[in-house]
Length: 203
Image (cartoon, rainbow, N blue to C red):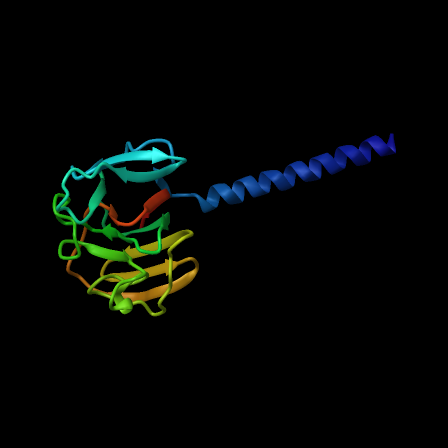
């Protein structure tokens, strides 16, 4: 009888622990909206320069329609002002890509119409390469993203921006007020580029 009581108590204790972990996980995920979960592209629209497909849970661009186009963009259907975004990406060593935020012209995505959080290991001026916001904030530390999965955490609140790549803060509190709001855009430029697990949370 005592042994059965002990087993019952142990099971109850384990169950309570699992419930606590579940509640903590729920709290951590509060407010986050999944823009891409590896299953569909319902939250996105292409810019017409390529076809976008899902392969092994990742977004890839295929069949670029305009040979003169330097890049293709997948643009979020929703517009965002103050937010934080988490995105995982894989690029080849020679890739040129980026995550564009507050795109003021979804038909003409670029660093002149949005903030470009760069993914460009071989940029001639590495200070505005991977980890930087092009023409806005240089990377505090030059990092390489090629040949592996990486995680970007980008925070845009008012005129202040923070960028963290794989746990390393590359932009800390940079300020700029050119663009106030707009969609998110994923760039598929030179080399192999894949994105997965894209989430956003309004601030």
